[in-house]
Image (cartoon, rainbow, N blue to C red; front, side, top):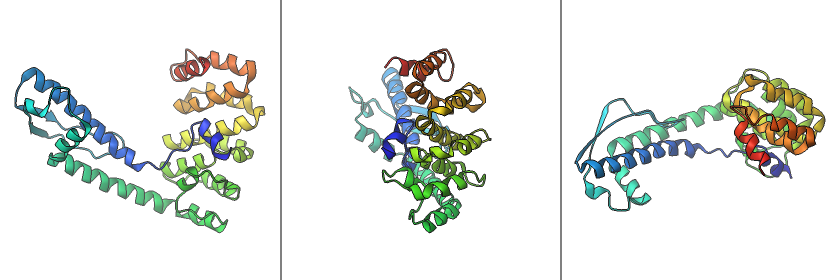
Length: 269
């Protein structure tokens, strides 16, 4: 139940650095699909595509023109397979350069994050928790009760990059950490980066599921629009443990522009 409960409220997120790169691939997929339609309609041979910034941590392309010679033969009837598309992309020097640049930038980010979390890693090892990164705890199903006090203390330190602090918070999204409810709530109500805010919300959602006496407090957090989209993690917890009161509260969120979709989806189950 250690990991299952955490995953039911937003779960552990793997250290998926490769997902950032795939954002760029997704942009290229959209680009080539658009060009295929252009080719079918115009039956031309020259398409002009303006470079644009890739999403997230992916590489950014300069705002210079990129020319691709495209014939209708490049787009067979029925469209391209994924392999054919990737083969075409691999022939594009700009794509290869952008990918290499993005991978290099990502490696630098990961290196900075690893360096920043070394004080935490060292404290965890002194407690007998041998990890290379706090995300090793997020991604394990093994209990780590001896790490919780260390994690809570480091979460309260406003010295870590957002990605590291998010990992600390998500590592605290386990039922035994519910004893830190008040401290978690105090951190949540302070200015946080987007990732850390999400992580602490997940930890609080797990904690409230373990201690229903915090219902008044968690409802107040949900009403506070300043807490942004991270409030969505509380909706399921309130519905699960709040009984008729909780259901009524979630019903009141149906028209909320941020939480309405989640509330409606949960109520329809």
